[in-house]
Amino acid sequence: MYARNGLIALALGTSLWSGVPAAVAADNVVLVSGAFRRSIPVSEFETLAQTGQAPGLLGNLLFLARQQPSALGRLLNESMRLPVVLVSRLSNTRIGDAVLLRVARIIYPLKAPAAGLPALRSALVMGLVEGNGSISAVSFLKAYPTANIEVNIPALLTVLQKTSSIAQLVRFFSESPLDGLRGETSPGAPTTTPTTKPAPEAAAPPIAPSIRP
Image (cartoon, rainbow, N blue to C red; front, side, top):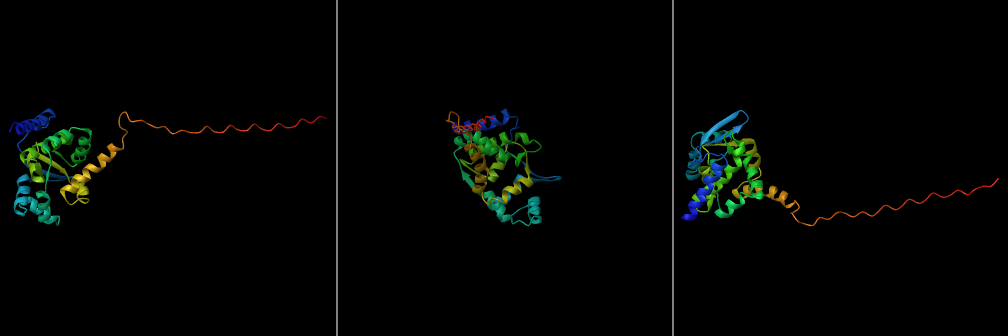
């Protein structure tokens, strides 16, 4: 009980310290693509996950996009089990920042993309705490610490073309940043400098024989 309360305080403290207003849950997902903007209540995503039926505006958008509600419903229902304390610690490291920054380019508080990183940290920890170590897309949305979440549609579609499950999403967001960090030289590691052989000295030009008259 004390550990749970401590983790909740940690997540809320992160939100307040970083300037992200704390909220019980996000109310709306705002889809943005250029001049296009549509706001969908989080409750519609929750209904789709629970019933397989897409209500309201969410259903209309899926119909216009010729997408099956069942496919999105499966994605919303996929969950992952993660150790809460470990996620809380890793999300505040250089590796954690590298991974979360990629996600924060797609999902961030409405009209406040600079607050995307701390908002993600808070949503991850709060979602895992509320889910007893398990998190899904719906529980993530419900734990997001701002009322309105902006989703960059072009960036999201680019990712979805390469992934079809939560596990693949995690792999997509983590592989490139981790590879970049692995490629850096660790502090204190010995460095080797290539040795070059000195160029051979140029031969002296031949001395022309002196000709006596």
